[in-house]
Length: 295
Image 1 (tube, rainbow, N blue to C red):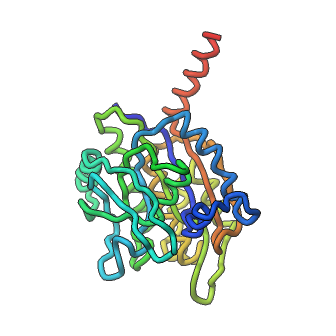
Image 2 (image 1 turned 90 degrees about the vertical axis):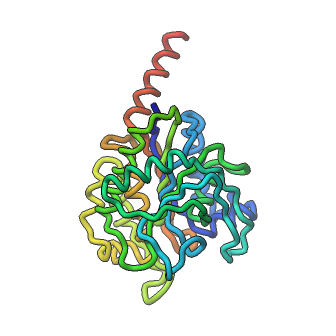
Image 3 (image 1 turned 120 degrees about the vertical axis):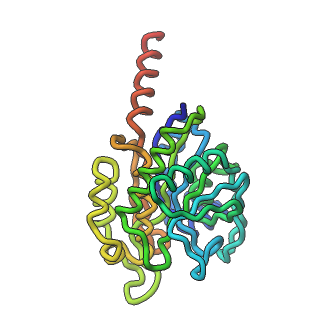
């Protein structure tokens, strides 16, 4: 049976890709953000996931305002990233896992989610940059299932609905009979607004509220309407919906492994978190005890 180990939650600002491309990770402006990643990679090295369920939002590469599904799931064997106009070379994207995609799709429909299924799908920086951060200088050694959430074109799904989506994905993963080690990623945010009268807006108080409650009480993040979240986090900060959905897939009890919060990068409050499931924590403790016995 598959094992769900936890999740990595991160900002996905396109400028991060530019910093990677330029080798600017140690420049003073960027270093606080990139310094968050060694603990993440250490955790990944210990857990060795085979599959990433990627909760993210598309910014116009695969979907545009004329066709913007509320929830869309990739069911392709291959995905690719293309030029989005940021002046970045395309990042490598690992292959898909169509069998698991379809199992998730079947479960979501059974749970009365109306979703768009994509057997051909481009994935943008919101998916490719987090993978490049987690596994730098190479294609991520995983298969992916991309789940795109509309955070762009109103009406947007509510935080409550996104958490329910994630929990339904979690049910599908619990029923999956494969032997993979699975992790989730939730990307985007945190608070930022790039246009309008509030351009440059960030809200550390709300961001820390989200980070403090994400592990222990994710339902607390659903108490605000989506319009209130836009007010609290900024027009683009509503990408917290991706974090909420990803958290839902992890079950009731998780443990925080690491976190980082830094303002600003590219007019965005940047954050990185790792949450570990109870099952993964118990397995790690058992392994450590066994090692100690043998020493």
